[in-house]
Length: 155
Image (cartoon, rainbow, N blue to C red; front, side):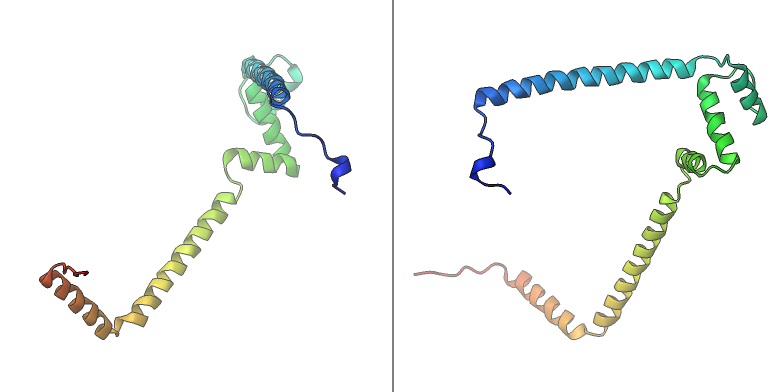
């Protein structure tokens, strides 16, 4: 439980600055490392397939010869989905944008639009017959426009 005995002392400005500098340097290093890895992976995916087993896999699902590793990864995902592996099927559907999230969002949008239309109709029916109040408000506004602003005198 937190109490006076186990609280850490507040850092001095100098300590905080030093720790912040070290953290910034480490963050930059990590970003550069991640960027380099992403570039290397992209280069590897763009290389042509040379493994005969991978070429056979691609041939099995109808992909042409001379394809890239990127195509091989795609073939692997498709074959896994065809074999009925749920993880591959889910990944494939997610990658092509058929996850159902869009459909659920569209359905929710349609439901909201319908609800708003119903509320609007209810509002119109509720206040449509109440022309007396509307006439009073319009008469008041017309009177204000005709008379112009009035100045109140204060003594």
